[in-house]
Image (cartoon, rainbow, N blue to C red; front, side):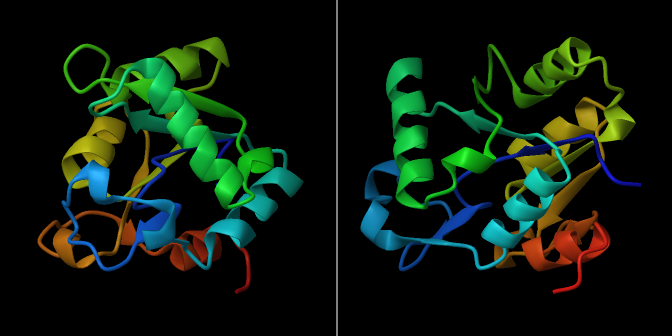
Length: 166
């Protein structure tokens, strides 16, 4: 089934940081140390062509909401992918978790959880939050996710499962 909406995390999912450990400090993550996953653009182009909205849900970490949104927009413009993103939402691990944001957006758009798909790189903060909201999810295949026995794929694998030949 083709989803009606895609939820995704941003850093670590759409783009990656090289020369950094998986859980390194946010402050060490700079534009110079980041690369777009090679399958991000094909995935986003496919979804835009199919009119499937892409919603980024990111934790605001240590910055204010305003600064977090500005920082996300800077990353999207840096990688020339902002035109493929329908909406950006900021979550907070305690007061506004991703599961709550997902549920709100689904309700606003009158969609069921089964009509959505979540793609993320962190088991606890992405995959489990999608599951709490009842949304099918892919956890990206990364060394730090090896131990989890859940639905995993690379972005290339997500494209393939959506029926796109890569």
